Length: 249
Image (cartoon, rainbow, N blue to C red; front, side):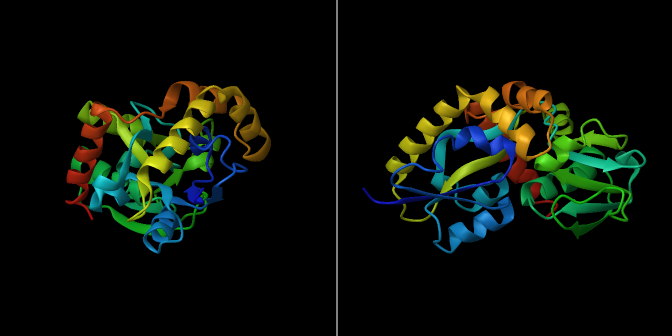
């Protein structure tokens, strides 16, 4: 059996997609932030990676079928936070871990709010909105979930996207390296997702222990807020995002 090199994200929302792969025979599993996963895939260091959806725009034919991280409406884990309403921000710090979330932030201000007067700058992963020095700060992943009950003013970018487009938003997809065995990757990753969907409570409990996300938040997030199937509406949302991204990047 040829070794399948799989790389995913170190966030709660990726756990149901990789259930059992960490120690599976024939699989070499690793984790990294989305922005670096795409570079590792392009360098041939992995065979398949869970990449930010914007990374797949250049090679959509290498997206694995039926597998993704998506939301319809609030997503909780991708938020603009600030001491005041982020809609009025003139400076925004962008969490550099996800190019997709950064692009969606730019779309939010330019296309949804119709604003062109916002200055963007990079911030380290999981920035503290109180320390970023910007009017609003993009925070993603588990760090975004930990801010869910904070005193910051927040805009949920998943909610803003669906309200504006009536489409779901696809945050991440499995993308194959050029020349990788698509059938083998599809089989292993589909099996992993089905195991993960059957064990959402266990993943929520584990997240509470390791990430600081409250167990009840993690459980509802996995069971109700995000989902993991790439269908026709998700494909439409993905393509709309790619089109709108061209205007802001």
